[in-house]
Structure formats: structure tokens, C-alpha cells
Image (cartoon, rainbow, N blue to C red):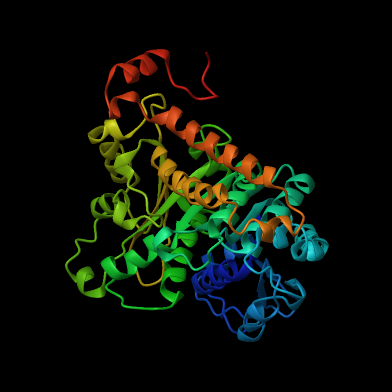
Length: 451
């Protein structure tokens, strides 16, 4: 069995984590409140050990560490479900206060040893660890600073295991914290150098899905957390259930990441329609394929048409023909060759799991590694540069032991990632002109390409 240990960090990470455990506990027939199995199929138990541990009293608990620098935010989880092991709650004495420096240097550092001890206990209880799954936001202090600290420690202690991050990235039209650009900027070096797979989520795109696709008028985060949880369930479905074409985390990593630094992925999910629209749906694989390549179904505010796909994957759930799925996915590439890089000939990965999600006959999860993500990184760089130029709010960080040079180094790292994505996929014909022709003749300006 290839088990995964989950770490949910900060307010956003714990909210998404709770929604994820809601979804997969139902899929495996485990009661969320009591942790007892009430399923009807042997398939629900076959690979339940990937995410759950079993106790002597035949109860299951989630293999997750619940982490926050402020105790009040995670107390609700402790009382709402017996799915969480009490020893796996790690809380500090004071909030990180939306400050990366406090999460990394002071408040977060105080609870790091406790986090690592709990993680070590969970790792030693499994037979064959596949990797770690980290859920967090990079806009707050805990999700950015403490997560960076934890990732550095995990890479040092478990160098052979994958680190998979589900990251909520700040969006300009839905900013709740003034210093979000700083926190996000300072998180980038840890994500670039320590993470193996980084799935980028965006609150703005998720709210648009709720308003535009699902026609839900809402003010809370319950619905968008559920959409993220469904997508995470789709990505991990081949680990948990048998299928015709399998895709573990390691397979996704090998197929989706052409170069170690270019591991920032855009997830998507289909179907995302109202019950009324579902009545008019054909319910075909062709319809699913069409939807997952639509920017309206992506969980990050990225337009796929403004870049080139380095690699893409479709993970399908439900009874369907592998031949039909392969033909449709290959057909998408053949019809849109200008949207795919030409130096990876077969850059679409397909996986099929026979077990559909609850309430649906079939679904599809999309994973894309696209050069269009550089617009997201450029947005983070521009937002932090404007503030850093005037040194606005900088004293809150330097007062906690940071130096201004760390901000400059992080900006250089972020600019390097933008250049890597631009050089690896975006050809010079977007804007035209003699200079572009010369650049194209010189070959891709990517650090991984030979001179």
C-alpha cells in the first residue's frame, strides 16, 4: 500500500482539509462523525489505508496533522468529528497575525518540533509512505511562513518522498489582507525548491465557478471548499480505487513535470453545472473532455489560450471505454496543436477509475502544466514590487528578524520562474517583429535547454 500523510496548515488549509475528509470519508463508507465503517462494498475498504488508519476498535481516523498557530481556529474540528486523532492537533499560543516572518521565525518555529514529532509518528505507522500532501494558503502568516519551515524540514528528513502542495493563491479582486503580496512572494522560494507538485487554487476563480456555473449566490467558503475537495478526490482517486489506467502521485509527477522547477499545475473539474442544466446534459465522455479544457472549469484564474500546455492529464471516473477516452484526448491535442509545445510529442496523460464520485455517473479531473501561469506569477511580482519600492509595511517583517535582502532574493526567484515558463513554451511569434525573430532563431531561452 502506498500511503499518504496529510498536513493541513492555517485557517484556509484546515477548511479545505475538513471538506476533503468529508468527501473521501463518504466515498469509502466511513461515517464522518464517528469514524465507523458503514459501507456496502469491499472496494471501499480495499485501499482505505492510503488516507486512513484503522484502530483496534474497528474505527478509522484520518492520517492528517491539523496545524495552526492559533488554537481557536482548529478547536471546531476537534469537537465536530471523531475522524481526527486528538494527538494530531498542533496549535501555538498566538496567531501569526498575517505575517510570514512570525510564521517562519517566531510563532511557527515554536511548534515546529511538535509538528515533526507527530508527522514522524504517522510515518512510522505506515508500511510504504508515498509522500506528503500539504494544504495551505500563501496569503496568511501561518500558511506561508510555517508551511515554508515545515517543507524545509520534511525535505531534509524524508528526501525520497514526494511533497504535494494544494496552495490557495491571493487574487487581486478578493484580497482580505493588505500584506498578502509579501507573504505570497516570500513563500515562492520554498515552493520552487522543496515542492514536487504544486496545485494552484484561486478564490476568485472558485467564486466565479459558483456564480457562473452553479448559479449559487453565497457569502461563505463552504461551496468553494467542496469544489476543491472534489478535485483533490479526483486527483487521488487512482490511489484509492482500482481502475483501467492507473495514475499514482509518482506517475503524475513523472508525466506532468518536464523540469524540476516547472511543477506548478492548474487543476480543473467537470461537470460543474446546476441540477437543471444536468437534465439537458448528454452525459457523454466527449462532453466531459470538452469541459475540462475550458477555462471556466479551472480552479485558478488562468486563460489556457494565452499560453502553451507543456503537459496535461485527464483523470476520469466512471464506466467508460479507454479507447474512446484516448481518442478524444488525442483529438483535442491534434485540433489545438498551437496550444501545446512541440518538443514533447505525447504530452497528454490519461487515467481511468471505475468508481464514480457520489451522486454522479461519471466525472473528470484536469491537471495542466501551462506557460499561461506566468501571468499569475507576474501578478504576484507586480503587487509586491509596488509595496517594496516604498518599503510599505516592511517594518513588520524586519522587526521579526527578517532582512530586506530576503525580499529581493524572493523577487529574483519569482522572476526566474516566470522566465523559465516563458522560455520553455511561449514562442516569439505572439507579438511579431525583428527582435522576436532573432530570439526565436537563438532557440528557447530556458536554463534547461542546451546552448
